[in-house]
Length: 413
Image 1 (tube, rainbow, N blue to C red):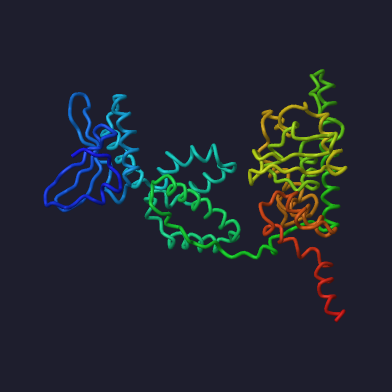
Image 2: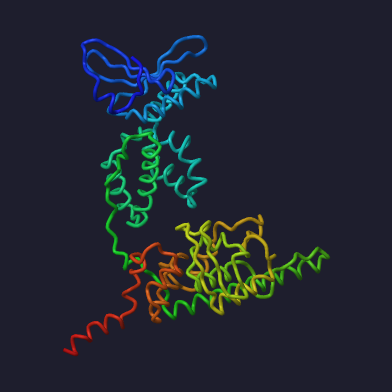
C-alpha cells in the first residue's frame, strides 16, 4: 500500500494478524511496518553499494510521522553521499558504550580536560582538584561514584582542618565534571545530583583590614621597596667597580609589581586573576575608568570601575616601567602573564605583622570600606561584579546606621 504517512493515516490502520507495510509517497524508501500484533515501526529501505538494506528509524509513539520523515530524508541524503549509515550507527553505539563504562580518570583525560581549557577560566585548579583531591576515585566508573564516598572524603578533610568553603569548592569541581558527563550523554544522571553543600556562615568569612592593619600594610610596602632599591643600588655599584654592564632598573616609583598590584586591589576590589589578566587597552586614563572585560571576569560579564586618585596615580606611575601594550603586569623573567605572587605576598604580611589575611581579602576590604562609608549595596554589587545582590548582602551588617535607623522607628511610637 502506498500513501503519505501521517498521524491521521496511522489512526486508521488496523491490526490484521499479519505483517504489512505502508510506503510513503513523498520520500523514496520511507515506510511504516505494521507487525501482526499492531506494533508500528518506521523504516528506511535503501540500496547501498548494490545491496538492499533496511534501517530502523524508531517506533511510532517514540517518534511522530513528521520526525520520522525528517530523519529518513536526512539519512537518504547521507546514503546518496556514499555514507554507510548502519556502520555509523554501530560506531556511535560502541562509542556511547565505551563512554558509559568510562572511569573518572579516563573521562577527565579524554573529554573534560579539552573542554575545560577552552570554556573554564579556572581550569588549572579544577583539573588539579579532580586529579589530586579525588585521585582515589579515578578508577571508578562515572555512574558508580556514590554520595557516601564523597561524604566520607568530606569527613576526612574536615578532620584534617580543611575549611568548609574550600571543601565545597572542591566538591563543586567534581559535581561540575559529572554534570557535563550527563549533558554529553556519557551517563544518564549525575550520581551527585541533589547533594547539598556544607552550610557556611558567610559573615564569618569576611576579613578586612582595620585602620591600623592597613597602615602597617602600606608601611611594609614602602619598606620593602626601600630595601629592594638599596640592594639593587649596591649591586649596581658592585658591577660598576668591576666594569661590568649595569642592568636596566625599573622606574623610580616601584621596584617590582607587588606594590602597584596591591594598591590596585585595595582601590578597585578586583580579583587577583582579573588583575593578572588586565590589559592596558582596558584602562581609560582620560575618563578614569577601568574595564574588567567578560573574558577575564569570573562571571563572564563586563563591568566598569571608576579609578580613585590613588588607583589612577598608581597605574600612571607604573606606565614608566612598561610599554602601553598588552598585559599591565608581566613577569620580569618571562615577559608573560604573572600567575603567582604567593611568596612575596606572604613575606609582606609577615613584615606588616598581619595574620589570617589572604590576597582575596583585599576585595572584602574594598567592599567593606564602601559600605561603612554609606555606599548602597547595589552599587557595591556592580563594582564587585556580583551576579545578584544575595552575595553582596554579606556586607550589609557593616552599615549599622541603617539598622539603628530602623530600630529608632520604635522609639517614635
